[in-house]
Length: 121
Image (cartoon, rainbow, N blue to C red; front, side, top):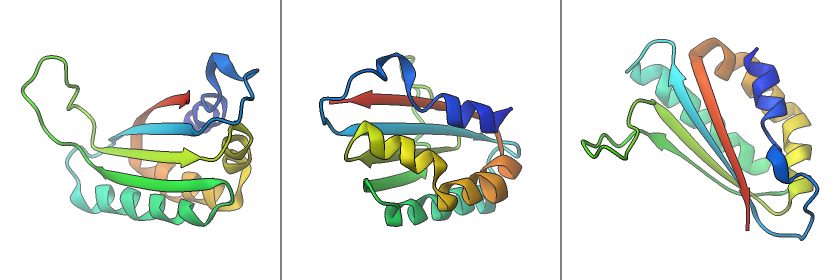
């Protein structure tokens, strides 16, 4: 089910827009074992491998920064921000073997829930 979510959630309602703007892909992960530092670090490390995928401009990944502010959701464990040169690059990334392997071998075994937000500048 998560694989389908990761693949289908990559586009959103603005797929028809192709103006060449930078695309931002925000992935929020909740671990099966909340607070597991080893699992968290493994997700962060594998995310860094995405920098070698064509069309990826940058990758940032890290742990939640807890907050007591009502408008801040601190319930997740890991967030990943991937910036792409274009919408086409985002679509190619989703099919890239490096991404597919990371999903299969790291993300799927460790994550209980994933939410993705994509937006274009």
